Length: 449
Image (cartoon, rainbow, N blue to C red; front, side, top):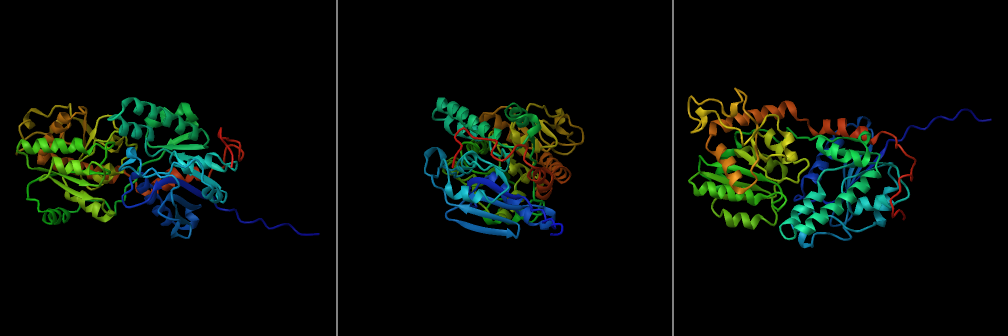
């Protein structure tokens, strides 16, 4: 007769994050988000982390990059890459393969799947019979992004594409036990799809050790790029394509320069619109290309304000990074990126009478906000004329920009979390809850292996 069996130690959840995007220095905000979350996970003691984490991405070849004993990136080459499609020029490369046998084999070794996109990796998970706990996060509004890229050439195709991709997204989300969204409006939108009890917010993170005011950055930046003192530097950071709308900012800056304003556009990023920016502003722009994080941080600190007119962003990490660097930001009214701001003001707000002409000595506080300035300006008129007028209000008022800069810095210090808090407060609890349905109960219409 044998004695009582010693219980085996409980196995940590093995989490597979499925991000079917190409991981390169040029990758967009979703890739950067998971790089920051993975770095935060690797910085925790394995016992405190409580999971084993593998982030699957696309790469030129199969590689494994350990960040710690419990955290790693695994890159798989795309089978049907979007990189050569005309519509996908300049956007993050994904994989359109309907099923990947190599990934299916790997997924059987994980007890949690976290879906982040709409194509090959997620489609593979949806078609497998084995189903552990499934979590999703909506980082990029893919239907809106695709529609924005198509709208200029074929508005009808843009509307159809948006409808089809929305249906595909909703079908995948219904398979999941829980979905993380970027903001409350998105939560309300998807409540009818998956139920409000299966939704929660995925907050934004900023790395304060990287992004902060740095008084040494501007003199060095001016010397390096041959920029005279006294110019207002307007920063656009991100992929330079139609969805981000850098040409809107470039044309606004061009008009301001034609009016005699000492203003220059700085573009930190690259994309199909980069040559057009150069054509619009041959002498009035600095095109930095894609920068490593430490150089990007110094570029933020060297500039005077961030102009980011994208309407398709669900998070927009560049806004938080700019605020942490002490930059006031200019955003479209109604854009989801406005949620970063603690004290936004509309461009329809009238300045105090004493502040209309300039902001010289003795001028009163603008916008009727008393002694607390805003940290950002929301542009209600989305035309070039509207953005020109909005930027002009800040270019002409350096003292106002200084007050807004201080408010941006303080708001970021007290209101923004770092990535470790985002991981531990928003993400880890969703990975460690048992699945609500038995494995295999949630079946895709095309389920199979």
